[in-house]
Image (cartoon, rainbow, N blue to C red; front, side, top):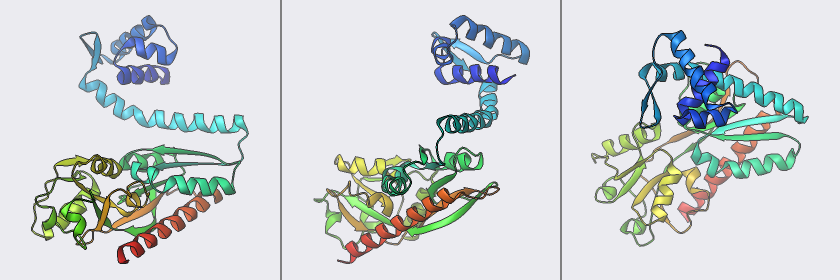
Length: 304
């Protein structure tokens, strides 16, 4: 399969109809359909089954998509570089981050960085943590940011700060009157917390296990900022990281320290085989200073 065939295949996998794929690729529907038929003939197996006017991918198609995804990621990187050169941009920095950090600390960091470097092109790509790691390793991002990132081949982790968790609840909740919240205090509460497939969720579950308290959230989420919004809607209590708490967007909620302390490592994620640019290093420096400032302010608030 050549690159154009893979583009057509990927579009059909995303949209599940040849009409939508054709619109995306500026092709005719018949050209897309013929291309899929030709690919199936070349490969010797079916890629899609038609069910109620939609194309349902076969298991073989899913495997092919997983194998071809890195090619498209590299193609995006090349296209972005060409766009930068065409626009004559003076420097660039591509940032990948998890949703919690994209919403909490990064807006402030980006504002400070671009105030100092208004001619630098900056992009922010918000992804799940595993995808942030892959984006940095594959060259789609110059730097990534995440909590509890795991080391893997092709990347290196640069420590930024150590965070802890806090409990947020409605001001009228019994939890709001406590000096700090423990797993036992949450036993009979409606708890919103990370799924244990998330590394942060694993650490929180371990804290509950050490306290001999079952870890059984009523609602499990991937991103902690989503948990905070659910609490604002009046649904339960949540355990958040300090960066999410620091946004100021949850000032209508009561915030209490959580014990035992769950330590979360905030890191910058860099490609192992490429030296970071001056702009990347400066961006990381601004990020670190902002993170430390917010942590110190939260600690002062908790002790006041």
